[in-house]
Image (cartoon, rainbow, N blue to C red; front, top):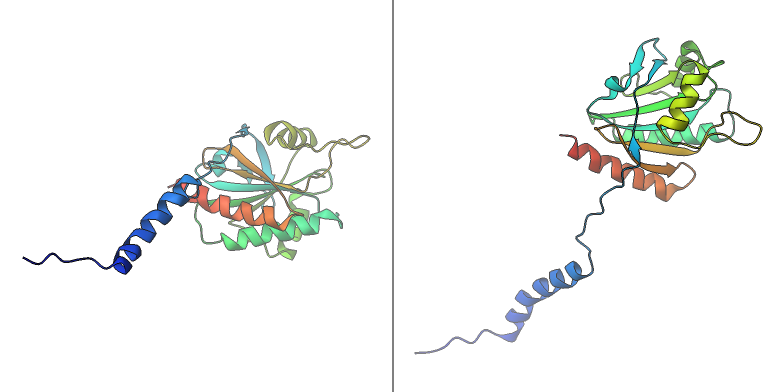
Length: 199
């Protein structure tokens, strides 16, 4: 009876992937980093550019990204809106995604003015809310609800370059700087991950 000897080359070809998986597992390469939870978004009621009332219930079951702008801004806001547009465009066909821009100058930014601003940026009216409301409500929601520092010495409410990622259970999952391209890439990746979990 002849015993077949498996050539060393065949053994190495079979063994290499197994060894590679063991090494990568030991290094934690397959470990999925769970996003932190920074708190829950409280109830709110603001007005969209269309004049429609938007509440937390309007975003129920959706992953969304919040950002802060005002229409007269010519410094950070164009960059923030441009980055928000990139994210919104990349996730345009995701049913469970919404972009939410909140004005920090609600006394000037009426729904009509926000509608003009949104049209200029070609923002999809079904996928991108532009919100305004009473000053005190806007301030409270940004600072206490979304936990975004937006007050500096001498200025009661100022915008932040941060974009806020919120999951389908209204939990804040991350803050990302619009001025950092790597963070914007991370935001898109994290949003996609949360959208998959929303089903």
